[in-house]
Image (cartoon, rainbow, N blue to C red; front, side, top):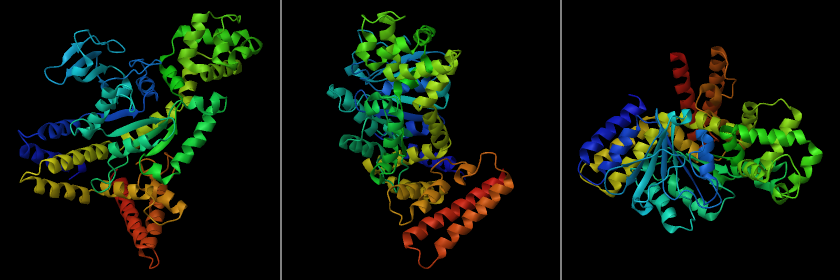
Length: 484
Protein backbone atom coordinates (compact mmCIF):
# COMPACT_ATOMS: atom_id res chain seq x y z
CA UNK A 1 0.00 0.00 0.00
CA UNK A 2 1.49 3.38 -0.98
CA UNK A 3 1.67 6.34 1.36
CA UNK A 4 -1.27 8.34 -0.05
CA UNK A 5 -3.55 5.29 0.01
CA UNK A 6 -2.66 4.56 3.64
CA UNK A 7 -3.25 8.18 4.62
CA UNK A 8 -6.53 8.27 2.69
CA UNK A 9 -7.82 5.25 4.61
CA UNK A 10 -6.81 6.85 7.91
CA UNK A 11 -8.63 10.06 6.99
CA UNK A 12 -11.72 8.04 6.07
CA UNK A 13 -11.76 6.58 9.59
CA UNK A 14 -11.20 10.04 11.09
CA UNK A 15 -14.11 11.50 9.07
CA UNK A 16 -16.43 8.84 10.43
CA UNK A 17 -15.23 9.28 14.02
CA UNK A 18 -15.49 13.10 14.03
CA UNK A 19 -18.66 13.53 12.00
CA UNK A 20 -20.71 16.30 13.60
CA UNK A 21 -17.87 17.30 15.93
CA UNK A 22 -15.62 20.43 15.88
CA UNK A 23 -12.76 18.57 14.20
CA UNK A 24 -14.86 17.48 11.21
CA UNK A 25 -14.11 20.58 9.11
CA UNK A 26 -10.35 20.16 9.50
CA UNK A 27 -10.46 16.47 8.53
CA UNK A 28 -12.71 17.25 5.53
CA UNK A 29 -10.38 20.02 4.40
CA UNK A 30 -7.23 17.92 4.53
CA UNK A 31 -9.00 14.99 2.84
CA UNK A 32 -9.98 17.23 -0.07
CA UNK A 33 -6.41 18.55 -0.15
CA UNK A 34 -5.04 15.12 -1.13
CA UNK A 35 -6.43 15.72 -4.64
CA UNK A 36 -5.48 19.43 -4.81
CA UNK A 37 -2.27 21.26 -5.79
CA UNK A 38 0.26 21.98 -3.09
CA UNK A 39 -0.60 24.87 -0.79
CA UNK A 40 2.25 27.32 -0.28
CA UNK A 41 1.81 30.23 2.13
CA UNK A 42 3.84 33.43 1.82
CA UNK A 43 4.60 35.05 5.17
CA UNK A 44 6.90 37.61 6.77
CA UNK A 45 7.02 40.93 8.51
CA UNK A 46 5.23 43.99 7.14
CA UNK A 47 6.81 45.31 3.90
CA UNK A 48 9.11 42.32 3.56
CA UNK A 49 7.97 41.98 -0.08
CA UNK A 50 5.38 39.18 0.18
CA UNK A 51 2.97 40.54 -2.43
CA UNK A 52 5.86 41.36 -4.76
CA UNK A 53 7.04 37.75 -4.54
CA UNK A 54 3.53 36.49 -5.21
CA UNK A 55 3.28 38.64 -8.34
CA UNK A 56 6.67 37.34 -9.47
CA UNK A 57 5.68 33.69 -9.06
CA UNK A 58 2.29 34.14 -10.72
CA UNK A 59 3.77 36.26 -13.51
CA UNK A 60 1.04 38.89 -13.17
CA UNK A 61 0.52 41.92 -10.93
CA UNK A 62 -2.37 40.41 -8.99
CA UNK A 63 -1.49 41.67 -5.50
CA UNK A 64 -1.15 45.33 -4.51
CA UNK A 65 2.36 46.61 -3.80
CA UNK A 66 3.11 50.14 -2.65
CA UNK A 67 4.75 52.06 0.19
CA UNK A 68 1.97 51.25 2.66
CA UNK A 69 0.79 48.04 4.26
CA UNK A 70 -1.04 46.22 1.44
CA UNK A 71 -2.11 42.76 2.52
CA UNK A 72 -4.67 43.08 5.34
CA UNK A 73 -6.49 39.80 4.84
CA UNK A 74 -5.43 36.26 3.95
CA UNK A 75 -5.83 35.90 0.18
CA UNK A 76 -5.78 32.62 -1.73
CA UNK A 77 -4.66 32.46 -5.38
CA UNK A 78 -5.56 29.25 -7.23
CA UNK A 79 -5.73 28.05 -10.83
CA UNK A 80 -8.84 28.35 -12.97
CA UNK A 81 -9.70 28.56 -16.64
CA UNK A 82 -11.16 32.05 -16.20
CA UNK A 83 -10.48 34.85 -13.69
CA UNK A 84 -12.87 34.86 -10.74
CA UNK A 85 -12.85 36.14 -7.16
CA UNK A 86 -14.84 35.68 -3.95
CA UNK A 87 -14.97 37.11 -0.45
CA UNK A 88 -15.59 34.48 2.22
CA UNK A 89 -17.29 35.98 5.27
CA UNK A 90 -16.91 34.39 8.69
CA UNK A 91 -20.63 33.70 8.60
CA UNK A 92 -22.67 33.14 5.45
CA UNK A 93 -22.11 32.27 1.82
CA UNK A 94 -19.18 33.42 -0.39
CA UNK A 95 -19.74 36.77 -2.11
CA UNK A 96 -18.68 36.92 -5.80
CA UNK A 97 -16.36 39.83 -6.62
CA UNK A 98 -15.11 41.42 -9.80
CA UNK A 99 -11.77 39.68 -10.50
CA UNK A 100 -9.67 42.83 -10.74
CA UNK A 101 -5.97 42.82 -9.96
CA UNK A 102 -5.73 43.53 -7.11
CA UNK A 103 -9.16 42.45 -5.84
CA UNK A 104 -11.26 45.40 -4.71
CA UNK A 105 -13.94 45.07 -2.05
CA UNK A 106 -17.27 46.87 -2.55
CA UNK A 107 -18.16 49.41 0.18
CA UNK A 108 -20.82 47.13 1.64
CA UNK A 109 -18.21 44.51 2.66
CA UNK A 110 -16.03 45.24 5.67
CA UNK A 111 -12.66 43.51 6.05
CA UNK A 112 -13.44 42.83 9.71
CA UNK A 113 -16.33 40.57 8.63
CA UNK A 114 -14.26 38.45 6.25
CA UNK A 115 -12.38 35.22 6.77
CA UNK A 116 -10.44 35.35 3.52
CA UNK A 117 -10.40 36.41 -0.13
CA UNK A 118 -10.04 33.93 -2.99
CA UNK A 119 -8.88 34.64 -6.52
CA UNK A 120 -8.82 32.18 -9.40
CA UNK A 121 -6.52 32.84 -12.38
CA UNK A 122 -5.45 31.01 -15.56
CA UNK A 123 -1.77 31.31 -14.54
CA UNK A 124 0.39 28.24 -15.34
CA UNK A 125 2.32 28.33 -12.05
CA UNK A 126 -0.91 28.10 -10.05
CA UNK A 127 -1.73 24.76 -11.69
CA UNK A 128 0.90 23.13 -9.47
CA UNK A 129 0.73 25.36 -6.41
CA UNK A 130 -1.99 27.35 -4.69
CA UNK A 131 -0.36 30.49 -3.24
CA UNK A 132 -1.63 32.10 -0.03
CA UNK A 133 -0.66 35.71 0.71
CA UNK A 134 -0.84 36.49 4.43
CA UNK A 135 -0.83 39.84 6.28
CA UNK A 136 2.53 40.88 7.66
CA UNK A 137 3.56 39.95 11.17
CA UNK A 138 4.37 42.91 13.38
CA UNK A 139 1.59 44.80 11.61
CA UNK A 140 0.58 48.25 12.80
CA UNK A 141 -2.95 47.00 12.22
CA UNK A 142 -3.23 44.53 15.08
CA UNK A 143 -6.12 42.66 13.51
CA UNK A 144 -4.13 42.04 10.31
CA UNK A 145 -1.30 40.27 12.13
CA UNK A 146 -3.85 38.37 14.23
CA UNK A 147 -5.44 37.05 11.02
CA UNK A 148 -2.13 35.49 10.01
CA UNK A 149 -1.68 33.83 13.40
CA UNK A 150 -5.27 32.58 13.31
CA UNK A 151 -4.77 31.20 9.82
CA UNK A 152 -1.74 29.13 10.78
CA UNK A 153 -3.25 27.96 14.07
CA UNK A 154 -6.47 26.59 12.51
CA UNK A 155 -6.12 22.95 11.37
CA UNK A 156 -8.58 23.56 8.51
CA UNK A 157 -6.27 26.27 7.09
CA UNK A 158 -2.71 26.20 8.38
CA UNK A 159 -2.90 22.47 8.92
CA UNK A 160 -3.18 21.92 5.17
CA UNK A 161 -0.33 24.26 4.21
CA UNK A 162 2.44 22.18 2.67
CA UNK A 163 5.19 24.79 2.66
CA UNK A 164 5.87 28.34 3.81
CA UNK A 165 7.93 30.96 1.99
CA UNK A 166 9.12 33.21 4.81
CA UNK A 167 10.56 36.57 3.76
CA UNK A 168 12.99 38.38 6.02
CA UNK A 169 15.51 41.20 5.80
CA UNK A 170 17.50 39.66 8.63
CA UNK A 171 16.57 37.05 11.20
CA UNK A 172 14.88 38.62 14.25
CA UNK A 173 13.67 36.84 17.37
CA UNK A 174 10.09 37.43 16.19
CA UNK A 175 10.93 35.62 12.93
CA UNK A 176 12.22 32.65 14.92
CA UNK A 177 9.07 32.57 17.03
CA UNK A 178 6.86 32.68 13.95
CA UNK A 179 8.78 29.92 12.16
CA UNK A 180 8.57 27.72 15.22
CA UNK A 181 4.83 28.24 15.30
CA UNK A 182 4.31 27.40 11.61
CA UNK A 183 6.73 24.48 11.49
CA UNK A 184 5.77 23.05 14.89
CA UNK A 185 9.07 21.19 14.61
CA UNK A 186 9.14 17.85 16.38
CA UNK A 187 5.53 18.01 17.54
CA UNK A 188 4.66 14.72 15.91
CA UNK A 189 7.82 12.71 15.73
CA UNK A 190 9.93 14.91 13.54
CA UNK A 191 7.97 17.07 11.14
CA UNK A 192 9.40 17.86 7.76
CA UNK A 193 10.98 21.32 7.73
CA UNK A 194 9.02 22.90 4.88
CA UNK A 195 9.72 26.59 5.35
CA UNK A 196 12.04 28.34 2.92
CA UNK A 197 13.78 31.43 4.22
CA UNK A 198 13.93 34.17 1.61
CA UNK A 199 16.38 37.01 2.13
CA UNK A 200 14.13 39.62 0.58
CA UNK A 201 14.98 42.90 -1.12
CA UNK A 202 18.45 41.53 -1.78
CA UNK A 203 19.18 44.37 -4.21
CA UNK A 204 19.26 46.74 -1.22
CA UNK A 205 22.01 44.81 0.60
CA UNK A 206 25.28 46.62 1.10
CA UNK A 207 23.70 49.96 0.28
CA UNK A 208 22.34 48.78 -3.09
CA UNK A 209 25.75 48.81 -4.78
CA UNK A 210 26.41 46.82 -7.95
CA UNK A 211 27.59 43.84 -5.85
CA UNK A 212 24.45 43.84 -3.68
CA UNK A 213 23.30 40.38 -4.76
CA UNK A 214 26.78 38.94 -4.24
CA UNK A 215 26.66 40.38 -0.73
CA UNK A 216 23.20 38.87 -0.24
CA UNK A 217 24.46 35.48 -1.42
CA UNK A 218 27.14 35.51 1.29
CA UNK A 219 24.59 36.41 3.98
CA UNK A 220 22.24 33.65 2.83
CA UNK A 221 25.12 31.16 2.87
CA UNK A 222 25.94 32.16 6.46
CA UNK A 223 22.31 31.53 7.43
CA UNK A 224 22.33 28.14 5.70
CA UNK A 225 25.38 27.15 7.74
CA UNK A 226 23.74 28.13 11.02
CA UNK A 227 22.33 25.08 12.84
CA UNK A 228 19.65 27.14 14.57
CA UNK A 229 18.39 28.48 11.25
CA UNK A 230 18.58 25.08 9.53
CA UNK A 231 16.28 23.61 12.16
CA UNK A 232 13.60 26.13 11.16
CA UNK A 233 13.93 26.47 7.40
CA UNK A 234 14.78 24.08 4.60
CA UNK A 235 17.20 26.58 3.13
CA UNK A 236 17.76 30.34 2.75
CA UNK A 237 17.95 32.00 -0.67
CA UNK A 238 18.29 35.68 -1.63
CA UNK A 239 15.71 37.39 -3.83
CA UNK A 240 15.60 40.83 -5.45
CA UNK A 241 11.83 41.17 -5.43
CA UNK A 242 11.41 44.13 -7.78
CA UNK A 243 13.56 42.51 -10.46
CA UNK A 244 11.74 39.20 -9.98
CA UNK A 245 8.34 40.85 -10.36
CA UNK A 246 9.44 42.86 -13.39
CA UNK A 247 10.71 39.70 -15.12
CA UNK A 248 7.13 38.56 -15.65
CA UNK A 249 5.26 41.85 -15.78
CA UNK A 250 7.44 44.38 -17.61
CA UNK A 251 5.37 46.43 -20.04
CA UNK A 252 6.56 47.52 -23.51
CA UNK A 253 6.54 51.19 -22.44
CA UNK A 254 8.81 50.42 -19.50
CA UNK A 255 11.22 48.52 -21.72
CA UNK A 256 11.15 51.38 -24.21
CA UNK A 257 12.05 53.81 -21.42
CA UNK A 258 14.99 51.67 -20.37
CA UNK A 259 16.28 51.35 -23.93
CA UNK A 260 15.93 55.11 -24.39
CA UNK A 261 18.09 55.68 -21.32
CA UNK A 262 20.64 53.18 -22.60
CA UNK A 263 20.67 54.98 -25.95
CA UNK A 264 21.56 58.25 -24.23
CA UNK A 265 24.93 56.75 -23.29
CA UNK A 266 26.82 56.45 -19.98
CA UNK A 267 27.94 60.08 -19.97
CA UNK A 268 24.31 61.21 -19.79
CA UNK A 269 23.03 58.49 -17.47
CA UNK A 270 25.90 58.07 -14.97
CA UNK A 271 25.01 61.23 -12.94
CA UNK A 272 21.40 60.01 -12.68
CA UNK A 273 22.36 56.65 -11.22
CA UNK A 274 24.09 57.99 -8.13
CA UNK A 275 20.89 58.16 -6.07
CA UNK A 276 17.12 58.08 -6.40
CA UNK A 277 16.90 61.83 -5.77
CA UNK A 278 19.23 62.54 -8.69
CA UNK A 279 17.40 60.08 -10.91
CA UNK A 280 14.13 61.93 -10.25
CA UNK A 281 15.60 65.45 -10.28
CA UNK A 282 13.53 67.39 -12.85
CA UNK A 283 16.41 69.79 -13.40
CA UNK A 284 18.52 67.04 -14.96
CA UNK A 285 18.03 66.71 -18.69
CA UNK A 286 17.34 63.17 -19.85
CA UNK A 287 15.36 61.50 -22.61
CA UNK A 288 12.55 60.48 -20.24
CA UNK A 289 9.91 62.63 -18.62
CA UNK A 290 9.78 62.89 -14.85
CA UNK A 291 6.68 60.68 -14.76
CA UNK A 292 8.35 57.98 -16.86
CA UNK A 293 11.47 58.06 -14.68
CA UNK A 294 9.35 57.75 -11.55
CA UNK A 295 7.43 54.80 -13.02
CA UNK A 296 10.64 53.05 -14.05
CA UNK A 297 12.18 53.57 -10.62
CA UNK A 298 9.08 52.22 -8.94
CA UNK A 299 9.16 49.08 -11.08
CA UNK A 300 12.87 48.27 -11.05
CA UNK A 301 14.51 50.28 -8.31
CA UNK A 302 17.82 52.02 -8.91
CA UNK A 303 19.73 48.73 -8.77
CA UNK A 304 17.48 47.19 -11.40
CA UNK A 305 17.82 50.19 -13.70
CA UNK A 306 21.61 50.00 -13.43
CA UNK A 307 21.52 46.28 -14.17
CA UNK A 308 19.22 46.72 -17.16
CA UNK A 309 21.39 49.49 -18.60
CA UNK A 310 24.50 47.31 -18.28
CA UNK A 311 22.78 44.51 -20.19
CA UNK A 312 21.61 46.89 -22.91
CA UNK A 313 25.08 48.43 -23.16
CA UNK A 314 26.55 44.95 -23.74
CA UNK A 315 23.82 44.02 -26.23
CA UNK A 316 21.89 46.97 -27.73
CA UNK A 317 19.67 44.51 -29.64
CA UNK A 318 18.44 42.83 -26.45
CA UNK A 319 14.70 42.17 -26.65
CA UNK A 320 12.18 42.66 -23.85
CA UNK A 321 11.77 38.88 -23.57
CA UNK A 322 15.54 38.37 -23.27
CA UNK A 323 15.79 41.09 -20.65
CA UNK A 324 13.00 39.47 -18.62
CA UNK A 325 14.79 36.12 -18.68
CA UNK A 326 17.96 37.85 -17.43
CA UNK A 327 16.00 39.63 -14.68
CA UNK A 328 14.48 36.33 -13.51
CA UNK A 329 17.88 34.68 -13.41
CA UNK A 330 19.74 37.54 -11.74
CA UNK A 331 17.01 38.29 -9.19
CA UNK A 332 17.02 34.75 -7.80
CA UNK A 333 13.50 33.98 -9.07
CA UNK A 334 14.68 31.20 -11.41
CA UNK A 335 16.58 29.62 -8.54
CA UNK A 336 13.56 29.84 -6.25
CA UNK A 337 11.23 28.35 -8.89
CA UNK A 338 13.66 25.46 -9.39
CA UNK A 339 13.83 24.92 -5.64
CA UNK A 340 10.04 24.87 -5.32
CA UNK A 341 9.72 22.46 -8.24
CA UNK A 342 12.52 20.07 -7.26
CA UNK A 343 12.21 20.07 -3.48
CA UNK A 344 8.50 20.55 -2.97
CA UNK A 345 6.60 19.57 -6.10
CA UNK A 346 8.64 16.35 -6.25
CA UNK A 347 7.72 15.63 -2.61
CA UNK A 348 4.07 16.35 -3.25
CA UNK A 349 2.72 13.09 -1.81
CA UNK A 350 4.97 13.19 1.24
CA UNK A 351 4.11 16.80 1.97
CA UNK A 352 0.39 16.17 1.67
CA UNK A 353 0.63 13.06 3.82
CA UNK A 354 2.55 15.06 6.42
CA UNK A 355 -0.14 17.75 6.39
CA UNK A 356 -2.84 15.11 6.82
CA UNK A 357 -1.14 13.37 9.73
CA UNK A 358 -0.51 16.73 11.37
CA UNK A 359 -4.23 17.49 11.23
CA UNK A 360 -5.16 14.06 12.62
CA UNK A 361 -2.69 14.62 15.44
CA UNK A 362 -4.16 18.06 16.22
CA UNK A 363 -7.81 16.95 16.05
CA UNK A 364 -7.36 13.83 18.17
CA UNK A 365 -5.38 15.78 20.77
CA UNK A 366 -7.94 18.58 21.00
CA UNK A 367 -10.96 16.24 21.10
CA UNK A 368 -9.84 12.87 22.59
CA UNK A 369 -13.00 10.86 21.94
CA UNK A 370 -13.03 7.08 22.37
CA UNK A 371 -11.88 6.48 18.78
CA UNK A 372 -8.98 8.95 19.10
CA UNK A 373 -6.58 6.40 20.60
CA UNK A 374 -7.17 4.00 17.70
CA UNK A 375 -6.67 6.78 15.17
CA UNK A 376 -3.41 7.85 16.83
CA UNK A 377 -2.10 4.27 16.74
CA UNK A 378 -3.00 4.04 13.06
CA UNK A 379 -1.28 7.38 12.48
CA UNK A 380 1.93 6.13 14.09
CA UNK A 381 1.75 2.91 12.07
CA UNK A 382 1.63 4.97 8.86
CA UNK A 383 4.64 6.97 10.02
CA UNK A 384 6.67 3.94 11.02
CA UNK A 385 5.88 1.87 7.92
CA UNK A 386 6.57 4.62 5.38
CA UNK A 387 10.29 5.04 4.74
CA UNK A 388 9.58 8.55 3.41
CA UNK A 389 8.75 9.64 6.96
CA UNK A 390 11.84 7.91 8.34
CA UNK A 391 13.88 10.00 5.91
CA UNK A 392 12.01 13.11 7.02
CA UNK A 393 12.77 12.50 10.67
CA UNK A 394 16.41 11.81 9.90
CA UNK A 395 16.71 14.97 7.76
CA UNK A 396 15.35 16.93 10.72
CA UNK A 397 17.97 15.34 12.98
CA UNK A 398 20.73 16.12 10.48
CA UNK A 399 19.62 19.74 10.21
CA UNK A 400 19.50 20.21 13.99
CA UNK A 401 23.04 18.86 14.54
CA UNK A 402 21.78 15.81 16.47
CA UNK A 403 23.95 13.36 14.50
CA UNK A 404 27.64 13.22 15.52
CA UNK A 405 29.43 13.08 12.18
CA UNK A 406 31.91 14.98 10.05
CA UNK A 407 30.54 17.78 7.89
CA UNK A 408 31.29 15.86 4.69
CA UNK A 409 29.41 12.82 6.01
CA UNK A 410 26.42 14.92 7.00
CA UNK A 411 26.28 16.58 3.57
CA UNK A 412 26.56 13.22 1.83
CA UNK A 413 23.82 11.66 3.95
CA UNK A 414 21.52 14.67 3.60
CA UNK A 415 21.83 14.49 -0.18
CA UNK A 416 21.16 10.71 -0.19
CA UNK A 417 18.05 11.16 1.96
CA UNK A 418 16.61 13.66 -0.50
CA UNK A 419 17.69 16.94 1.06
CA UNK A 420 18.68 18.32 -2.35
CA UNK A 421 15.97 16.63 -4.42
CA UNK A 422 14.26 13.25 -4.32
CA UNK A 423 15.24 12.04 -7.80
CA UNK A 424 17.76 9.22 -7.79
CA UNK A 425 20.42 11.19 -9.69
CA UNK A 426 20.08 14.17 -7.33
CA UNK A 427 20.44 11.85 -4.32
CA UNK A 428 23.56 10.25 -5.79
CA UNK A 429 25.09 13.53 -7.01
CA UNK A 430 25.03 12.28 -10.61
CA UNK A 431 24.19 14.08 -13.85
CA UNK A 432 20.50 13.94 -14.73
CA UNK A 433 21.36 11.90 -17.85
CA UNK A 434 23.34 9.23 -15.96
CA UNK A 435 22.96 5.72 -17.38
CA UNK A 436 21.30 2.86 -15.55
CA UNK A 437 24.65 1.12 -15.01
CA UNK A 438 26.15 4.29 -13.54
CA UNK A 439 23.19 4.64 -11.15
CA UNK A 440 23.44 1.00 -10.03
CA UNK A 441 27.17 1.39 -9.46
CA UNK A 442 26.70 4.57 -7.39
CA UNK A 443 23.92 2.94 -5.33
CA UNK A 444 26.18 -0.02 -4.60
CA UNK A 445 28.94 2.32 -3.43
CA UNK A 446 26.58 4.25 -1.13
CA UNK A 447 25.02 1.05 0.23
CA UNK A 448 28.43 -0.42 1.05
CA UNK A 449 29.73 2.80 2.62
CA UNK A 450 26.78 3.35 4.97
CA UNK A 451 26.53 -0.35 5.73
CA UNK A 452 30.15 -0.46 6.93
CA UNK A 453 29.59 2.65 9.02
CA UNK A 454 26.42 1.25 10.59
CA UNK A 455 28.15 -2.01 11.57
CA UNK A 456 31.47 -0.56 12.76
CA UNK A 457 31.88 -1.12 16.52
CA UNK A 458 33.28 2.38 17.09
CA UNK A 459 30.44 4.19 15.35
CA UNK A 460 28.39 6.19 17.84
CA UNK A 461 24.82 4.91 18.27
CA UNK A 462 23.10 7.99 16.77
CA UNK A 463 25.35 7.90 13.72
CA UNK A 464 24.85 4.13 13.35
CA UNK A 465 21.08 4.68 13.44
CA UNK A 466 21.37 7.37 10.75
CA UNK A 467 23.61 5.14 8.62
CA UNK A 468 21.02 2.34 8.85
CA UNK A 469 18.39 4.74 7.46
CA UNK A 470 20.78 5.61 4.62
CA UNK A 471 21.24 1.89 3.86
CA UNK A 472 17.47 1.44 3.68
CA UNK A 473 17.20 4.47 1.36
CA UNK A 474 19.70 2.84 -0.98
CA UNK A 475 17.63 -0.35 -1.00
CA UNK A 476 14.39 1.54 -1.69
CA UNK A 477 16.05 3.54 -4.48
CA UNK A 478 17.47 0.39 -6.04
CA UNK A 479 14.08 -1.33 -6.03
CA UNK A 480 12.40 1.70 -7.59
CA UNK A 481 15.10 2.06 -10.21
CA UNK A 482 14.82 -1.59 -11.27
CA UNK A 483 11.05 -1.31 -11.45
CA UNK A 484 11.18 1.66 -13.86
